[in-house]
Image (cartoon, rainbow, N blue to C red; front, top):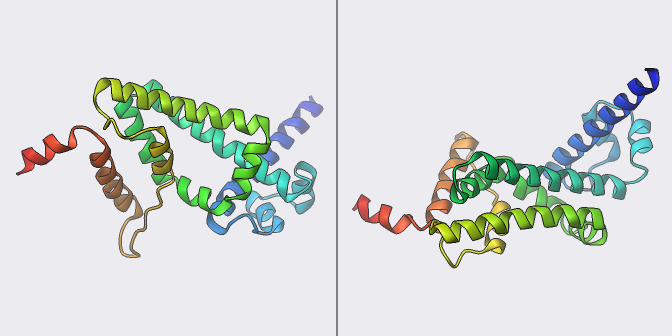
Length: 197
């Protein structure tokens, strides 16, 4: 029982470290100190280095968590929404509101090269890409997504970063910009615009 408790503690420490790294890499870039990551995770630096012997190992773990999180988001949206367009809308809103773009821009090109060098990371990335491609294909078939908008376009839109003024609620800024963006890629936009005249 003690061994199981130790394993659970080790998993918990690892998860806390990766979660802290995801936030700090997003906010400060990958050059943030390992001590700052450990402090944010609530563990000692020694514990961090036992789990991740160097910065590269931590970047790889953060990349895997980032991609796995995207895969879970797109899968959940696909499962819970009524159609592909609704799933794409939900997925893009979640990407914007959780700062996917800020994370991606902070860790590039280091994460990009790691993803392409590590077969496990490549597989997770392909899972995300395939799921988005499936939604795009279905939305095209349903006639709800503009035919000239492809999977690569959705991948770019996932990394949209939205500025909000100091005097405004960031969630309101995200909602407004994402609404405008979705109106631009959905096929219902010209009809809605005509109705508004």
